[in-house]
Length: 266
Image (cartoon, helix red, strand yellow):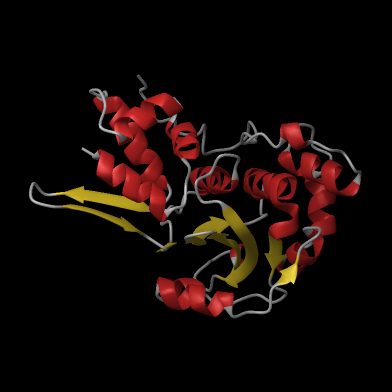
């Protein structure tokens, strides 16, 4: 079980305030403050909630009876291939209260030479750069091919423009398959590319698809995230309160998002 010293060290590694970690863990600030000071006897569920929050921020803790260790994974590459749950993970990382503390959000497309369907040969990818770590999503099969897949991508774009409009960039060329490179090499190469500011998704989407065609196809579907995205960017609607953490459309074959156990608190 995570210890007060590990909590303090982990929080320092990601430069998080007590209030930020408490919010992410779903506990009160007073509870976290007492735990870090070694006061009281916190519930196991509370300590587990804190450890989950730190783990989601890239902090790993270990204890073997003789020593305690805390380390930060400065680079990570989620291996979730299932697009719906991967999109939810992206939204968590770029959403309000994320301990990642986003610095830049980089969009790019890569070739997938293993795809049988020609329409699936381009994958939309993201490099999320935080203050202390980076997360590369290049193994997920994000595409705009189909209503459900387009909804996932539109939901990410909607949140990105609502929350981080000044931090968005894209590559103007399709990359070769980045997944065959080791994580550190892939991130190093991506960081060295010529990134362009992205004031609108169209120039990026047109690199590998057709924004106007997709906007025409999905922009008129009531309740579809693409419609909300078009309304926000092309018609000046605010929509900041609707970024919601958009749900998948009813025809999403992947079903509802997973929900973990509620964090305990004292």
